[in-house]
Length: 514
Image (cartoon, rainbow, N blue to C red; front, top):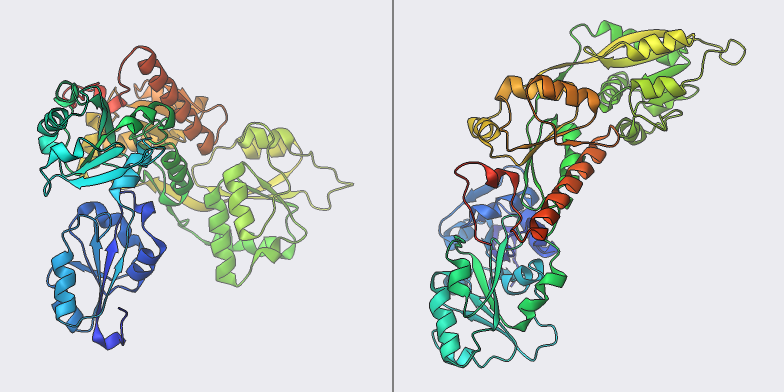
């Protein structure tokens, strides 16, 4: 059914998928964008609310009553609404009350969790059978399944089910896998056999939702596992930067399987006296400068905001030469519509920029002045280097960096107590500010730094530096941490051990069986 008119109300039963918010269907996302009210049972569905309009109400209650009041209601359902779902009665109630409704299929755990665990659901087998253990107790009939048997809601009775399948004629050597937290970074899979299931899972601590998979397809996991084998799988990584700066870094960490948490340690604020920037922008437009040098994306943002204040755009840079200290700053300029003329080919720093900056030549350069909009706490390296090359610098405070407010208590406790697996320090100031607002990271936490200067600051605070980027960029830092994680994983496997995250090595951390 579809809504006859906006005033009539409408209920959409939307399959939320197995856990990974990226597995929501396009139709599901579209309906969430129209919702007045979202009804959900599980906290895990919270990330899906990003598809909703601002101000959407999230609640529980009678769907029919809400719809009769003319509201557009989306009922989020785990997995697929029509597969082992508890919403059948709610659908029937809407039908009986003549409330228009729609049912949107979702990606079912039966296939998705297996795929994320590296177990092909139905490859080269004559049958793929899905059973709800809460409803079906005839295990002797399922023992004859010649293909892959997937069992929902059976984790509490996994061992009795295994024994019943063996009693029904299934060989005790039949491969079996148990996977919980499927398709999320909490996914955890144990591979065993029906005969050894009790011994291999008694310390695993499995809870619902979990799936039991029985059949030869489980044996392909060693070759096809791609999700749980990511180099930083499940690592909780602290990213102590401003929100604008950390977004791309967090996305990169997610691609490695990590769970990044952005904790601002620096707050960017306008300069106390804006007149200096006002004069600089006026001089930029009237031809006072030959060059403009940007040493951070924040400096680009500050100039861009001033341009917008004056009704200017990137065309005001016509005739000017523009330098950027590194890739992130260059990207901010390109987004602004300005292509940098100079970018260090080696070290992305003030020193690297000076190394490639051309000396002032009165025959070639009509103006010898450089505009340098930057933070109030920047070093004088660039000014000194350019002055030595014959340039005159207008060193202008474009923005101020101040220490951010302390993070919430649970974050502070996780930092000091070893709840984070790694922390990425992208500058000396992030080291000083994080320790200042939240305390020193626990000694099990992997400390990753962007370069030697940041490493030196970390060591001054008594931190052990484990990882250093091969070049001073946030992207290189994330890649270096991923390489470190991959080596740790390989070493554990070579030693016949189950790979463990750093946080699992602290005293009192829950241990899982091999």
